[in-house]
Structure formats: C-alpha cells, structure tokens
Length: 466
Image 1 (cartoon, rainbow, N blue to C red):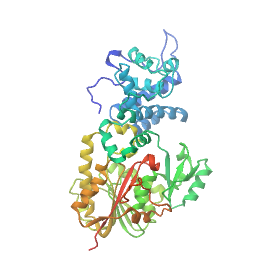
Image 2: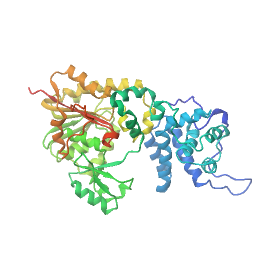
Image 3: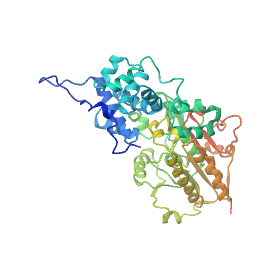
Image 4: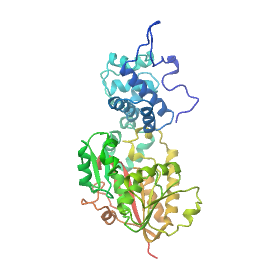
C-alpha cells in the first residue's frame, strides 16, 4: 500500500523534479504540442501513479477516459501500457533493481516500453522525453532483452507475490507454472445471453448484426465468447438487454444454485448484481429474488442493469452490521441462498492484475474469518431441504475447500451435493469440468489454464429435511 509520506512515486527522489508534460515553448515562441507518444505515455504514467497510491486500475482508467475523449486506438494503447505494467510488475522491478534503479511508476513505464514494446533509445525518448538520467541508464541495460531471465526467482518469473506461491503450489502442484502464466495473460470477453428476452443462438445473431462475432462457451449453455474487444455498448444486443457481460465461471456458479420459477431465493452478497441477473433469468422472472449487500452504493448500481434486462422479480436490501434485524427475521425462509463471498480475487488476476500487488496474508486472514461468518449466517436462512451455494473467485484452498470442511464440521445438518448431481441444474450438455485425473468431484473448481475461465470455486450444500 502506498503511504502519504512517501516521495512522489513517479521517479527517484534523487532525480530532481519531473519536467512538465503539457505544452512547452523554446524561448518566447508559440508552445509546442507534445508528441502523441508522449501524451499517451503521460496518461499512462498518471494512471500508474494513481494505482501506486492504492486506487483500482479499472476505475483509474475509466476516470482518465471520462476526463478526456481519447480516440479508441489511443485508449487501447494507454490501457495496454498500464495493465501490462501491472501484469508484469515483478519482472519489471527485477530488471530495474538489477540496473541499480528503485522501482517506481516512471521507471516501470520506461522499462515496459523496452522489455514489452521493444522500444529502442529513440522510441523511448519520444514517449518519455524527460526521463531522468538514473532511470535512463538503468533502462538502457534492458535493450535487446525480454521480460524473462533464467536468474529470476520463481515468484518473479510468475509475476506473483512471493507469499502466494505456497498457496498456489498447494492448489496446482505440478501445474503451477502454466497456471501462473495463465493468470498473467489477458482475459477474454464472455457474455451471457439474457434468456428472459432471447436464446443463445438469437443473441449470437443479434451481435452479428453489428459486426460482433461470438461463439458458444464450452460449458455454460447461455454463455458467449467474443472475439477481441468490440464496442459492445454500441450494439443493439447490449442496448436492448439481450446480453450481459459475465465470465463463464460466474455463469456456472449462478446456474449451480438451481433457482427455479416460483421459489424464494436470496443473493446474499449481490454487489452490483451480476449473478442476481443470472438468477432472475433462471427463475423466468417468477418467484421472489432478494439481493442484499453491505454496500448500498453497489446495490444501487444494479438498478439500471435490472431495468435493461427486463427483470422485475428482484427486491434489494442493504444489510447493516452483524445483527441485522431484517436477516434475523428471514430464518428458514429461502429455498436457495447464494453466498458469493468477498475473497482475495486470486482467480481474477487476469482481469484485475493490479489487485495481486494489494493482496497480503493479513487480507487473507481477514477474509477467511468474514467468509466463515457469512456461511454461518446464510445457513440459518435456508429452508429444511433447501440449498446453500458458496462461491468465490479465489483459487486458494483456505477460502475454498478449507471453508467448506470447517463449515460442515460446525453444521452437521448440511451435506455437500456431489458436483455431478448439482451439475444437472446448469442445463449444460457437457459433463462437469474436472480438475485433473485425481479430482474428486465434490465441488466446482475452475482455473484459467485448464478451463479458459476465471479461477473459481463453488460448493453446493443441502440442508437436511425437517
């Protein structure tokens, strides 16, 4: 985490003040406009400084693009630079330290241009014309090199925090390196066909009208995978609520809930409503679906999404502290409860590469305690014979299997529904995805390298009948 008493992270303290990036003049003449390359680099640098100070990359980039209406090619270049630095920060920092330079946003950006963009000295000067001498000297040692180097420690080569490596080894074993590489790659774009309005084939045809090519996802029967990064919000399919952005793993977790028309269903940690929308579609807009979250602002973000999707069986409720009175009155009141628990998000590092550098053992300890409390709270809300689905976008056993094992020890009135049995609720024509030849199919376990989805975990638990 960045602290307010740290020096400006754009550069080393010894490098002197950074020259202004705006219009410049030589003498008393007319100000010279910065080169396009320098303008793009300046925007990327500003974003990297904000991220270094603890802001999320997606929000930083959105704010930057809202402030200035960059053309799409420039937006793409800025985003690739910023997210590229976030993805490969460990390797970039290793090269900078090897060159005797303290890692900081300005130095990282310059190193990324060379190691990832193959920039030569002239190209580097076009992008960063006022790069201080210490940074320049360190970066010059990287010419003709790539990010990889045989001397890099495993965590550096994997671009992951060192503290996470034992956890990932416990999850993946001999598959650790390809899974780490997949976590560092860019994620594709998955959509969900909104079956309240259209089927998957119809959604594919509607997207094609606007030149967006989509194909069915392998596991989710309502999933679409899109080629590239098209301007989705300009399509009729998006405007009319025929499709919604949702990774295939998240779609499968919602389908495993098995929510049916006419039931009473609770989405306990609904956030901005991604899985709420999927549950409403599974219920055909019939029955009662309640979306709750501790963050009322995020719940309010769901309103426009629900309206666009044509959902009208959802009620929203912001829950307060541990003793929320509304929840206390709902004991035994739901056929299905989904706990999409707050987690480290280790399975989504492809989409949120900056998040891995904010993660910590302390955060994991805090979250696992919170997850256990949420499971215990949710367990009392399920009717006898009803089902509780616990899901995370984490690939850490401490947040996944360990939580379920501890919960079942506390709650003997619950059992794990085997994945093969629960999978029928998804409607998929394919068998449930496995996790290798020795996989015991108790729970859904997905990973980027094996399944081309976000890393995800879901357990289906059933309460004993009265």
